[in-house]
Image (tube, rainbow, N blue to C red):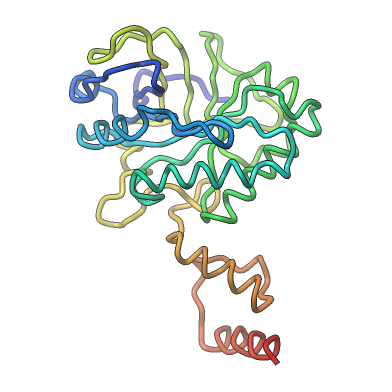
Length: 274
């Protein structure tokens, strides 16, 4: 994996443990982004999530949200995603966020490597099906070594790596999107320790990748490295056509539709309704 650089954009991640935060001081200290804990499992909502979201946005930071999974098997991921999306909705919905959404996986309720990997894969795939967006995976080296395999290498990585030694490749991952490099950071505007992170490029590159700007691209791409994603309503429509008209799941919500394709879709739907 790539090494850290002094030129990389700097940010933080927070949960209720950080208490009251002066977000203007955080931004003035050079932090350009933040990931905020939203939910855990199927019931817990971080009680600082909404206030942190509003404060960080108003101070000009790019904002992402993460979910701490407790799913023990693939069948349990839907309820977690339902909960996560409900809470995201309270903050304005998917389009209110700049950074990718995050699946935080660091406990082993799912048991074996095969089952943990299958559960994470199910979470990622279901979230993408529901929203049209790939989440990041947040995890750390020993968890990857013990519980994940290279079938997840297509999912962008937020890597918790606390060493000055350049990180090696892990389970198919050859790069990281974001790197958390300490849990003992000190930042003006926050009392006590806070996790420090950096993006893989400069602040200008971070803004180009994730700031909504005039183009409407929030960087939450439908595929890793993509230039943008279809709105959630388009993804919902795509899924309805898959379920109701039998169109191929290979068809993407952002794909252009010519008159021939539209006719074929309508013909399939009409035939199914007879």
